[in-house]
Amino acid sequence: FSKTKETVRRIVDDTPFTELEAYYRLFELIPPDTTLYMGNSLPVRYLNLLAFKPLRAFSNRGVSGIDGALSSAMGFASVSDSPVTAVIGDLGFLYELSAAFLSASFKKLKTVIFNNRGGGIFSFIEKTDKEKIFSTYFELSHNLTFERIAEQNRTPYISAANREEFLEGLERFSHSSPPLIFEVVTETDLNKRAYDTLFSALTAL
Image: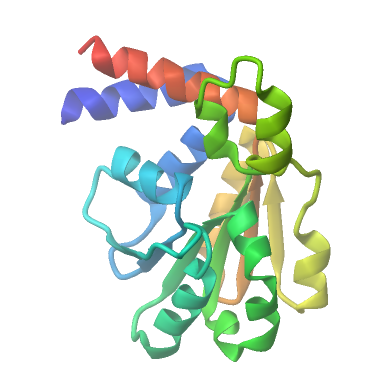
């Protein structure tokens, strides 16, 4: 266990800023009285990989995988006596955008949106000559950010696209009350490279 954590920390320190680092540092920071509600696909997988302390976390699987996570998190927050943080991908949040506007429960959430500009999990699949099919119909690549959505919803907003911005944003996030949106923007190619590097290192232990 200690060797695994040391390996993760070394990869985080030695590689450019990626979602691997962001998830790792987020899980290290989350206090024990906070409940995490994890989106599907990459968020819940990173939780399994990078949470090195006990965390109270929940998730659910929608019909299409990503659907329902934000609504479930809001429902959880509406009855929870402890703080709730939703950790969700960009497509998962976009899928349920109306829920954030229509339910007062969203105001009880701190929300971390990991924006890898599409279905980043599909970048881990070997695509060979099918790159265009994957990018168009599976990854759903986009250049959207969530600042205007937060503004329209009158929700405080933090964004980060590099290590310096992330560390600063994480500090603000930890001392802020809900509602809050913290958007973490990363690059899919760098994410995959860091993920592959980590698994190679873990395999060699």
